[in-house]
Image (cartoon, rainbow, N blue to C red; front, side):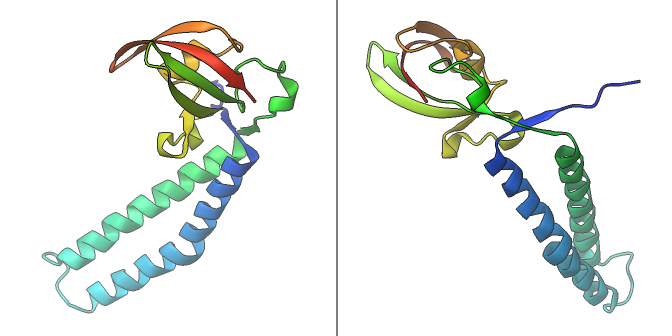
Length: 158
């Protein structure tokens, strides 16, 4: 028997997934069914690109719904209050300066399912987060990333 994958995420991340699921089930699913009906009205389905496109979209939507439902059934809410204060952990915000440039960056460490670097949320499985986990303010860390190595100093953990 295989063990179910657990999806660590913040309460905010869980809410976003619930909203996306609701949107897919109540709006997108109905829209694609309507597109299929319209495409069918064009007649011959064997060379009907609108029909094929709508069926592909329907398959994508149903797959996404299934994925999101699975994630929500196996979610583990990140409770950063249970981690040691001032230590980089899931759910914590970490600020660090790249050395020697002193360029400061700030990220929230979240589960892979809700990571979005453009929103400042990085996966706990990313090279940066893996290198920073368990470290504290003042620690200097060398991080190996696909873009090359970088040295950083942790300046804050909230």
